[in-house]
Length: 150
Image 1 (cartoon, one colour):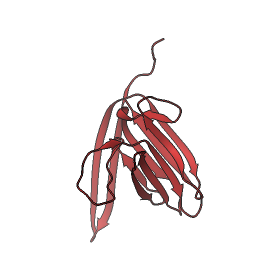
Image 2 (spheres, helix red, strand yellow; image 1 turned 90 degrees about the vertical axis):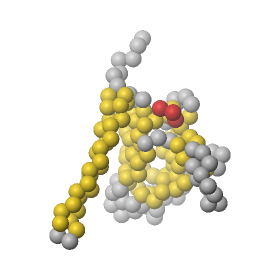
Image 3 (cartoon, helix red, strand yellow; image 1 turned 30 degrees about the vertical axis):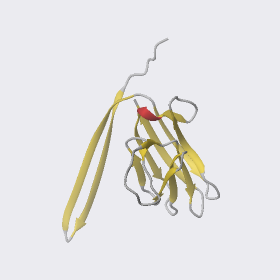
């Protein structure tokens, strides 16, 4: 049986608007990700006592696992109004980086490529991340995520 799912475009729009010295300023950026088919959107509770895996990336799809080469967009939004959440992007050979996501804000990626260097050395190469995990600060928080793939 052939799939009945059709591909679609994902339009992401970011708008910043504020007033500076009495002058309204607004900046908008739009990007379209074409051919999106598989996607996953979820709200999940993130504990503060331990780090938990949010999504995995690999060469083949599985429960909670996305094909790394096909991922085109990831957004993780901290839905809490008080506490931050720490997002960790990990490549199991040791390349890891952490991002602090404040209440009500989002962290976005347009692929799963990363490069980290604890010694401050020169850039060498990007590698595919193996997973994204999260840990809340002070008290559990809810996050919302969207992963879109081709």
